[in-house]
Every structure is written in C-alpha cells, then in structure tokens.
Image (cartoon, rainbow, N blue to C red):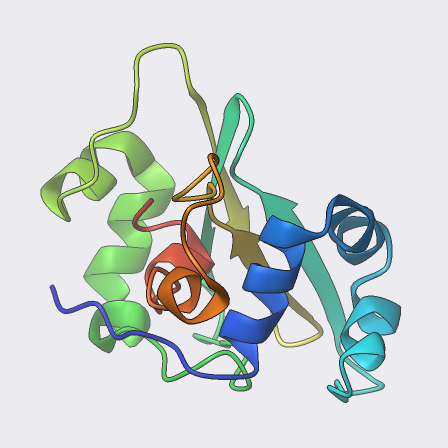
Length: 153
C-alpha cells in the first residue's frame, strides 16, 4: 500500500492544527469556518467532519455507499473504491488496518466513520513531533493520504 505525501491545502490544515491548539479546537468544532480561515473553500452542500486521532480513540474513515472522498485533501488511496476493502473494514476494522500495516496500541479504541455523499470526513493524525523540533515543511511531509483517513498514524 502506497502512502502519498500531501501538499497544500490538506497539509496546511493539519500542520496548523498541530501547531496552533486554538485553531485545532475551531477545526474540530466547525470545520467549514476553520478552513475558510486558511482561504480554503468547501462545498456548501456537503457536511465535513473532522476527527482527532491524538487521543484514546483512533478514527478510520470509509465511504461504503459510494466511495466519496474529500478531493481537496489529495487523491483517494487506490483501494478506496474496492468493495472487498469496504466490507472488511466495516466487519473487522482492526484486522483490516493490521493487514494494511497499522498495528494500533493496546487500549486504543477504534471507531470506523462511514461517510456518504452528503457527508465527508478527515482525520487529524497524531502529532509526529510533540517536542517541536520539526519545522512546517518537515511536519507537512508526515501528512499522507492514509493518515488523513486514519489508515496510518
């Protein structure tokens, strides 16, 4: 499975959330307004939810009905439209993520977020550098098409 590093605007959003706790709170509470702060327009007729994978819950996004993906993030992972993948992640999310190379820590709760044509979702991955040694460009390199949907950390 190939991870694709993400360029602006998704990396810009995640890096801002990692480095500005107040922005992260606004992003989680009202994604559309938070995106607008960064000059990013989002579809008026499609809801956007943002989940934080920094805590005790790991969120994995899937779109069972139609394979919708927030296109402004980056290209969807190659398997995103695969019916077998969608069935497996809904039936056995931890096992499917493990097959994909993601072993979740003991005690971490796993929630699958199944979106639809009227509702998209993205994940703020755990901060790769909580000590603050990396600059914005280095942090952005940790934002991938897989971390944005919780299929990698």
